[in-house]
Length: 489
Image 1 (tube, rainbow, N blue to C red):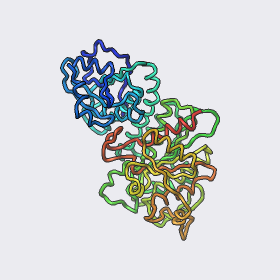
Image 2 (cartoon, helix red, strand yellow):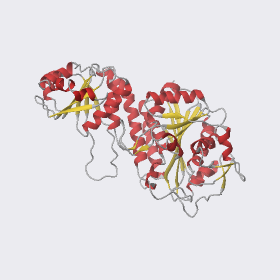
Image 3 (cartoon, rainbow, N blue to C red):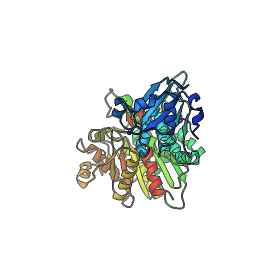
């Protein structure tokens, strides 16, 4: 698995700055162009190259967090000096984005970051850690792992203490990205479950429910999705007991390791992207790793339904009727609306077994949410205003886009079936909403619940401030923040 770069916080050593062994030195300047003591030292060594830069039209036109390079500076042994435009009291979000910009400029080079004057220097380091991700598991030859980074700060202990939980979350984000990026012949239902069992080394209790157990429990809608595949369907239960005796907070993820659409076969163009249809399960897995790594003082249970949707000879047909674990019957109109069938049984099981204090499910569920919100926001559907508000606040703090969507009886009526209790689709209109309405039928009235449709945000075609193109790890940071703020003892 991919690990974040090693970041070490050190005391400033300005006397030896000109001869530092790092190939890159990073300094900061606010929009007023004023240089802190470390930057002034670099300015002196480079015969005022920094002051000429910050007084230039180029620097004036730079946005907050942007980076300018002074290559092979005279008077220093380094290959380059990176000058970052950032206010000393910049917000955590701005500091993280600046860290991401530094990481993009660094590539694989090591660096000394002179951040002693910054308020949120740990967040700069966090942004650097998040942005240096690269998925190279399927490439041969030498890996391009970045060199270590040292960050000079006023108080090493304080910075290290602030960064420690961030590093744990970065581990979780990288875990999610690795899972989502992995091709389906590598990340099968079996290998996915095996990777999750490795979390037991961090203190997570991991239990794998095999197909015989799923049949015994009556998870027939989940099993219907995977019955056309040679890969066995599984449910993995991960328990983190970091709190007291209170009921756990539950996370449930859709883990379709590859989605052909089944008998309702998808078009060939772009089908290779369906390796990411286990994105919801990937986020749940990343959150469990994050909270275990940082030792969260909360009880959290994560459940993922792992299946493969294939058009085999035993595959579910459009028009088949299947009974869920809850007991409701579902007329399967479209076998490509499979994620909700997986979630329905796992959500019901989570509530029956754990009686959670609240439950959030995540899924790359509908293309309709991409039409509605693009790739900037996940869709948020909820039966509880307080829980929804807490999650949206957490997502805002972590700068992970999320937008609340409606639910209502009028949408629910679109799921009416003539031969069963419900259909699994409600037509083209409001497709992401009717999918959420379907899921809500498997939520007990007393359970505060959120459905997150992450189809547009789980994987992206372009780089972002804190991620390269491909899997983003969206949701790990926001959910970790929610657990920290709402559920930790």
